[in-house]
Length: 127
Image: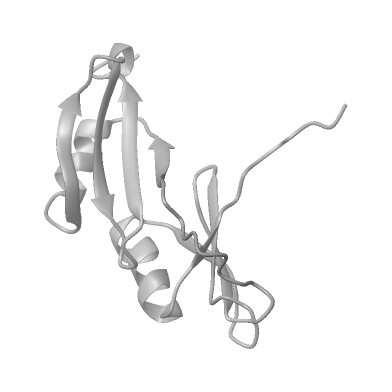
């Protein structure tokens, strides 16, 4: 049986430099690789990997764009909120939800929604 081992989304962008800058300067990602000929880059923060790219000629828009969000499980969501709420465009403010997550969301420079959440049982737990 095939085992899925990771998901590494590729986000399309019209401006590679702005997107690399956002993820590095606002979210603290590290640039792992970049190829300007391919209009592609790879970034990493902890165990999270993303790639960014300008759409290739063989990647056709089938009438449906990306219509979801990217959900990051994090530790210390309140600390991250304090860092990001003054440096990023807010989608929704930090809140504890009935499904047991404390979370908030921002928009990246391309308009993608980035959600950050931590299980309520972990909030404030320093063990």
